[in-house]
Image (cartoon, rainbow, N blue to C red; front, side, top):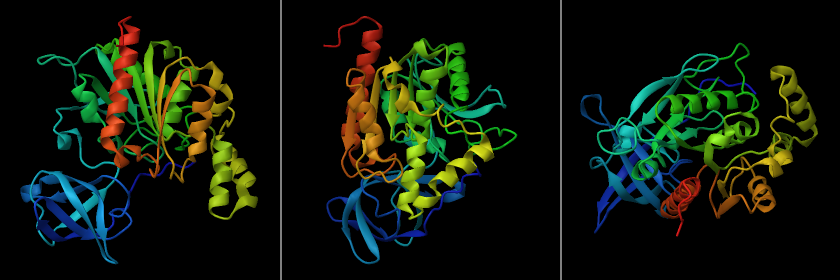
Length: 357
């Protein structure tokens, strides 16, 4: 699979009207971003090159040309006619979520990988000893993690949000293609080593979409897998042959599914058996927290449910009704964050031999 530079489309959007009827409301241009279910982020340009941010709740009303949402928080008031950039995954940097962070480089096989380090632990410490490493998805960005980084910070965890080979801004291989977790797990392994070298003692992993597949490949292949206390997976693909058939059906190209699989092998030398994580479900031993949306058209929810049903002893599964791909958080942030917090506290307590009460 080719991995071109990420250029996410940002639809032209304006704040058509600002209402202050008991609570701040924004009426926005109606488009593919502003009509998505759940929480929506906004970014716009302030004075002297600054960027401002806001978070809006679900759609309250809609017309043929506009949608209205409540303002959950905002850096500054949005004026009528202001051009804004909407996103349901992430905008800005950890600073836009009120977090202190460092831009760091993680040494890896193909060169240093850009990453965000949000230090945790007690005040005055550079980092704590409990870390979570976050991995984005296919053609994803580190900004995908911004929705959940504040939750990790509140728990006192240091978070390291990485990129990996051939992703936007990261080192490229000679072929310049994704291998769908067959090789990328080695970059996650490099991040685990980096965390250890910088004081990490108890480690968790979190992966969005293909980042979840990379997390599973790491747990499957890395000698460092026993160090991981828990894995959090959001909308992960667990097997790609069936995904290719899914896309072929979705776009009415069923006869071409086999050709696409063959071309992928020719282009990248893809080993589909190496990324069939369904086939080794019984071999995993790391506790997992799994989120998947019922409305996911990118990775069907059946992918997650096959794993959840096969390993109820290991997997805590949350099916989020109406959620699209990597957007379970958006549908119900409080419920998502509560489940994540409970899971993290439980696996860390179990690793310390404490009662989970």
